[in-house]
Amino acid sequence: MRRTRALRDLVRARLAAKRDQLRARNRLGKFLLRHGRRAPEGCTAWSLKYLAWVKQQSFEQAAQQATLLDYLHEVEHAADRIERLERSIDTAIETLPEKMRAVIEALQSLRGIAKISAVSIMAEVGEMSRFAHARQLMGYSGAVSWEDSSGPRVHRGGISKAGNAHLRRIVIEAAWAYRHRPGLGATLLARQRDQSEDIKAIAWKAQHRLHARYARLLAKGKPKQKVITAVGREFLGFIWAIGVAAERSQAAAPRRMLKRAA
Image 1: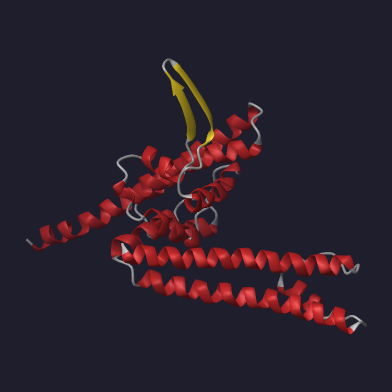
Image 2: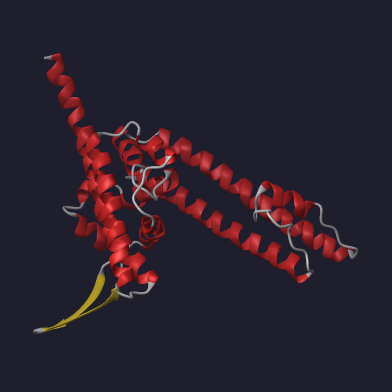
């Protein structure tokens, strides 16, 4: 439990650093635009080429030059900070129990869930099997509808948000990946390489079911953000299923070894 809390603090620190990086980039970008400085065509924002272009900029006024250098320093400092925190996350993962590491690896079989997202989910949830079924995990995230009932009258509204906001943010961000047709790219295949066929099957089912739900709700004229929220809520069911499957697989491993020894 203490390790989970410590990991949660670390991934939330990285999230704070990412938000600071976004603010630092916005300040620098707006400063350049105010003075008519636009990157050359084909120069992707915040790429190495873009940063090299920024460093080539200069101003006649010393105050403006000092402003540019300060904004650029903040952008570079934020990048260094994120890199340092991500190295710390890698180190923290290595110290986790085997069962927790197995869940982190298994969750990456899902489209939209890479290492940082998987670690963040593990840090926010802990053991998946502490939830008896997926609906409980959905409630824990606050992604279920609020309800106002009185006698025979039942009124449901938007999501309650009375839950773990960090978990809800992760799954809703990941849910955007399911607007695309089901498919297995090279990166996803690499993440699935060492996983069991059962976990791969759950991940593949998630792609078909969630994409179909996205398309169906969109066709009904639902706002895109509400559609993604609905997809994210159902996505939690697949996260729960894969997490529980990975935990059970790890729990069964010692028993299999004992049987072989006997």
